[in-house]
Every structure is written in structure tokens, then in C-alpha cells.
Amino acid sequence: MKHYLSGGLRNGANLLKDWLIIFRWCGWLPIAAGALAGYALPPLGWPWLMWIALLPLWRFGPGGGALWGAAAVLVSHRWLLALHPLTWLGVPAVLSLPLVLLLLLICAAAAALLVAMWCGLVQRLGPRHLYSACFAALLWGLMEVLLAKGPLFWLGLGAAALPGDRPLAGLAAFGGAGFLAAVQLIISWLLWRQAWPLLMFVVLAAHGFGAAALAFNSDVDSSQKLQLEVVQPALPTREKFNWEMQQRQRYLLGDAIREAEADGSAAVVLPEGALPEGEQPNSKNVAVISGGFRRDGIEDRSSLLWFPAGNQKPKSWLDKHRLVPIGEWVPGGEWLQWSGLSAVGGLQPGSGSRLLDLPNPIGPIAGIICYELADGASIAAATREGAEWLLAVANLDPYPLQLQQQFLALAQLRAIETSKWLLSVANTGPTAVVDPSGLVINRLKADKSKIATMKLWRNKNISIYSRYGEKPIYIFLCVSAIGIWRNKSNQMLG
Image 1: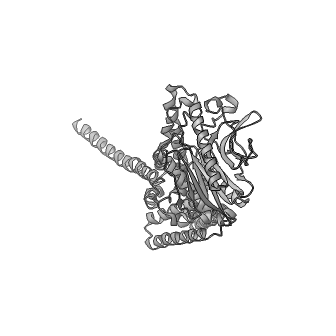
Image 2 (image 1 turned 135 degrees about the vertical axis):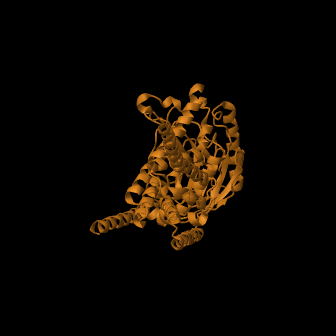
Image 3 (image 1 turned 60 degrees about the vertical axis):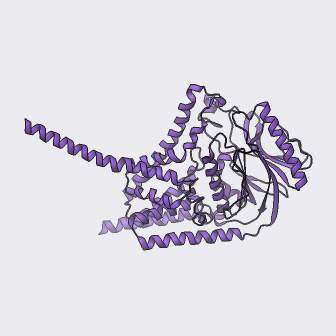
């Protein structure tokens, strides 16, 4: 009996030891690597740190991949917690924090599911084969591009190179954020396989081609200089619709109009949601471009509004297409009447096109309203349709500086992808100009009320990515699939 008990205890101890080892490698390692990936994303933007964080993914199964994905999102999207309290949206105080936590957990769960599926596919294909690695990397990049058109994606590996490594980010001019994500996964695979000569070649080549793209973007023939007066109101979102805050914004707009007239600026630009529905800018000699709200029939829209000089009503507009979950759009709200959760009573999306064709000297622009900055494919399509510069308006309050820095990194990426100048005008920041090489110029201090003159240039250049979009990724994906099929066929014949 004593021998039986001692044997049982020994077996139990060995079993516990085995489980501790499994937990160590299948629990702590994925969580730590995922957290490192989330930390490596903007605002840090260190891709070389990301490559290390990605390395274990090539050996993880679905379980490890799920933990990695959840940890990455929990770290990189922690700014979502700043949404609390949601009482200003009409949410009861007792439900505010649980709802914000639920939103963050939903994002983490979505990432966990997607990365788990990707890791399962990698293990099924055989992660040690180059064709399998290329196929998996390209598939990841393509999925980031497709997910960016939906409501639950903000940034991924495609943005990891900024602001820390602009030469690497230059690759986006050839294939967009999806291609940039795929290249970083391939680099991590070569690191995992310890293929040092090929790794060095790929890293150097990627930086060389990227730097060449940035140099080309910098030398793009800019057809017309554009000077604009911008307003960064820095109004607290939870209070911006009360009378005092609205009066403060009117005074800022009046001062900006007077400064624009004195400076000879082509227009005054205000951030997302600056004008309540029916609000009219009192500008006789200067045009106004402002984020605001308008009613289309019985539907409310968040829009980019164009008021020519002397016009009290907008003559042209671009409606926001990609709405923010909870704040602007609630799943099933149109059927279940949940739209009252929104501060503006529930918004409806507009057309998917981001082209706003304005007369000279403003010219045609790719209009970007806040969250739409994540969708690089739509912005590139607008430049292909004729947009000569990019305008991003946003209201990032009450979110912390972390989100502003992520927004600016995405703005840099969009400028590089399209080879266009970009102007960002946001309530609390970032308000800045970004040149086609992704260099940030004349940025205003965050969270400070400010009126400033911004200068940029229009150009008619169409980047390789704007012209061809994700077509190269689809081609390389097909080539990789053929390579996998041939390897499988040779193994069967062997």
C-alpha cells in the first residue's frame, strides 16, 4: 500500500511537472510574445522588436496563437479603456465600465480567433517550407487589408514599421500595408529558421527598396502649393455640445477666418464633428472645410462639409462610411432601436468612395474621417480616381496620447502608400502635415487649443500601390499555393 501511494505521488508529481512545462511554453510564452507585439506597434513602432515577437508564431498551434493574438490586442488597444465613463452617450453609469471592458475583450477575442486559425493553417501546411511561409505571410497581409473595411480593425503588422523605421515602411508604396505585413512575417520566419544569409539579404533589400520609394516620393512633381488655416479646438467631447463649448468654438472659427483672410489661406479647416447639424460658418471671403453632421431624409450622417466663401449651407460633402462601434453604430441598432446609445442619436454610413472633388485652389481630395484612416485600400482608390492630396479630420478625445500617436503613424503610412501630402486636423491632435515620404511636418502640440497656418502641395502622381492595389499580393499568393501543391505532389510521389 505504501509503495502504491509513493508511486502514485511520484506519478502525480511528474504529471504536474509536465503540465507546468506545457503551461510555460503554451501559456506564458504566447502571452509574453503577444504582449511584446502589442508594445512594438505604434506609438513605439519598432519592427525589429516585432520580428522577435512574431518568431514563436511559426511553432504555435491554435491555442498558442489565440493567446498571442489576445495579448497583442489587449496591449495595443488599451486606449479603449479611456471610453469610460460612457454616461455622456446615454449609458447608465453601472453599465459603463463593463461595456468598455466587453468592447476591449471582443476585440481581443476576435484577434485570438483569427491568429488561432492562422497558426492552425501554418501547422497544417508545414511551417518549415518556404512556399508555406510565403503563403501564410501573404494571407495574413491580405486579411489585414480586408479586415480594415470592417468595424473591428484599427492597426496591425502593416503599421508596425512606423514611426521607428521609415525606410522599411517605404515598401508600402509598392504593395500597401498588406505587403509590408507579409514582409515582416517572412523576416520573422527566416529568423526562426536561422537562415542568416537570406535573412540579411531580405532585410537589406527591403530597406533599400523602401528607401528608394521614399526618395522617389520626395521628388514627386508637386503641381500646386496649398495654404490652409487649421483649427485645433481641444474641446472635451463629453462637454463639446453645451453652450459654453460651442461659443468657444465659434470664437475660434471667427479668429481662424480673420487669420486666413490676412494670410491669404485658401480655406479654414476644422476637425471631425466640429459643426452641429444646421450650424453655419459666418465666412464671407474664405471657404470652410469642416467635419460636422447633416441629415439625409430621416438619417443622420457624420460628414466632411465644404462651404464655399459666402455660403451658409454646404455645397459639397463626403459622408463617413466606416463608423465607430458603440459611439456611432450599434450592431442591430436599426432593428432593435439601440441607436439612442449614440451621442448624436445613431448614424448611418455614406458611400464607400473617399473622393471629394472640390474646385481650385483646393482641388480634389481623399477625405478621411477619423476611423477611416485604417482603410488604406479605399484611400488609395480615391487617389486613383483623381485625389491630389489627403485630408484626415478626427476627434480623438477622450482617448489618451497613445491613440493620437497611432493615428499619426497610420497617417504617415497612408501618405507613403499614395505618394500624397496629408493634412491631419483633429480636435485634440494630431494636427500636422505629413509629406509623401512619411515625414511629419509642422505638428501642433497635443491637447492645446490652437489656430495655425499649414502648407502642403497637391500632385497628380499615382503610386504603384494606388494603381494596382492588392493585385501583386494575389499573384504571389497564387504562386505560393502552386509551390505548396508541387511540394505535396513530390512528397506523395517520393
